[in-house]
Image (cartoon, rainbow, N blue to C red):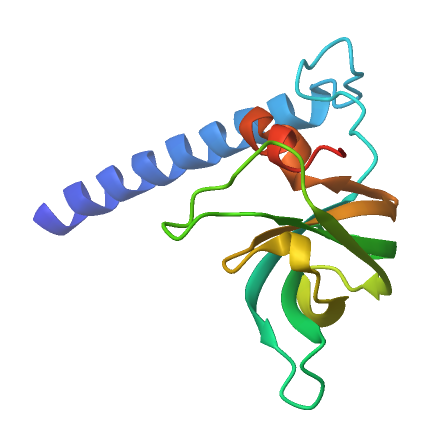
Length: 169
């Protein structure tokens, strides 16, 4: 008798599960799955993907083979998922005092180099050559940035304080 009670409970539970399953399947099959952008605020057109470019001066110093020029080593980074094309790097050289404080707002010299393309989510190390100038003083400082590129956004333009440093004289 006890075995029949368990069997009866099992059959009732199985029947309820089958009925609930049929109800759920019916609800999903009759639901409207043709959502438009008006129905869903998340479904909007995505902006065009661009490369996000940055250039940072990593090191620089006098060329040991030619003391009349300095070599500037610049790391160019592409944070975007699209290749940055026709990338151009510019380094502004400022006159500074012994403590490393920039004297004046305008750079005393500018070096520009076209480096070609930078692949998506990668970086490229570039070397720029700058002829030494007596106007630089004894302790010049340099700030490098991406000045131009196709199909990309330049990172420093998003930061207002940096835009002032990189402006042209």
